[in-house]
Image (cartoon, rainbow, N blue to C red; front, side, top):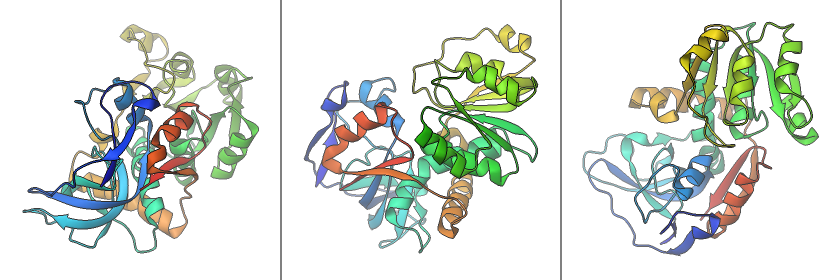
Length: 322
């Protein structure tokens, strides 16, 4: 089979497209013939070594496909099932071994591309809006990168819950996408100070929650945007890591809260995984939640996909197809 392999940390050029041995499922594992692969910032962090993975390895943590074989003790799926998964390394390949408990069956109405595009970003938006800070009708949230893959889904979920959504974007095209997703107010962070705009749009009160995947360049002003006892939910760091914060700063800004959330901690059990994934997939299949796929690359073009992702010029999801 063909796969992408990484032998050393570095730029997109370290992604090597080559032959790899066909894996065989062990106990509690399933062999999935990959149909579509999600491209995520976590794979950039793996590639550059920010998140450590033993070398060499096949990157990729999200995909959809067909179960081709199962090992002993597998009860969650059977051969022939159409499935999707997240948080299992090795997706940039034609076949991948996946712990069976991570696999979720796709609704009949859902294409493989939708399944691969939905798992990481859809479940991330779900846990942010329903668990990290469960939004309530009438509350106001600030969504950074509102036209990104998570952002567009998070805006839709926030509106579904009855919240008012302020979204930051960089271009008119991204503003159009965010508005179409339901954003009530658009802030152009490239030419407006988003802290000033949030204060203006909330009559100085601030927002109940900021959902921030940008990190280093936004976190300080994000804290300043919070109403007293509001929450800053950091869930990414596309601009770099956030430095250490003195807890007294949180007190001075209104006894605000800070969390650094991660999908793994919100899908820690099979039951929670199925709850989040099945709600997201059902909403997509019914048309209640709209996915945006920005571009689909061939598997051998993984380096080009990473370059585009890191350019921060995308709106929606990038996919690879074997």
